[in-house]
Image (cartoon, rainbow, N blue to C red; front, side):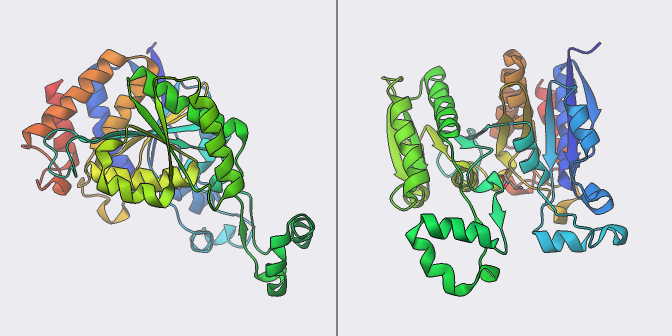
Length: 372
Ligand code: IPM
Ligand code: MG
């Protein structure tokens, strides 16, 4: 029997290609795993009205963790139009399967390292090494949304909040509402993870990003909680910034930031921005981590226009597999893999179009595998 059982979820588009590349590397490393394929993605939305079928979740429960490629996501109406005719107008509503996975498996912590690998011509600055901790199940992604606004919801808000008055004349049928629900527990957990990481890797600061000057209750909770948690980590400074200013500073002085922690949506935005500073989505890896289970996925999407060409950079997915190895406790393998990736990047002999070379994804994977 293999040492690990890994749920293998390639998903849509180039997710399949980068997963194939990753398999080449994992096999060469001698990673002892049984891979179990799971159906997930657009195809299953169209044919079954569910992008994350029940059978896939059941299968995942029998595995140690999951590797996930990419999925196509579209707004509600567009998604509904692509359903097979028999399923049209039957009340199926599209939800992003990755967001669902994060919520249903309670993968509360999204870790997104953004590290400038030496020799990468796309590095904005070579000193960048930032770990972003994104809260992964609450906030704007909690999914509590309305359109139209149910009258009783309006009434409750109107009774409890003076600012609802200014919306009354629009009529509930013309009001859409997305909520940002944040809990003390959720804030505390993600902030503590960020500080633990800083402690483990000897980082001197943790930056908590929100917008408490405007989002006074949710943002306020986040900042107050950060101050409380920070008291337990005397050697590590807590920096507090607003999301807008942080975006500017990340472009201006990215090397100043070591660990950044934010709620779900702000973390989503910051992690794309930071990824671009170290080579773009072709280098951006991430891990969705819960108490007992984790799903590892590159930050990039399914890139439909490149599908079938083996053109995209598989490094993000391969570094994602490195994060999986770390989480499983296979740190020696993880280090070897990262070293191999570093060598291929710094040699600049083999690479995909994004780094100015013309190799295929598979050739990049082979080059990394050769270093192993
Ligand atoms: C990400 C992506 C997802 C998100 C999308 C695909 C739903 O942008 O993982 O950052 O918004 O979380
Ligand atoms: Mg994103």
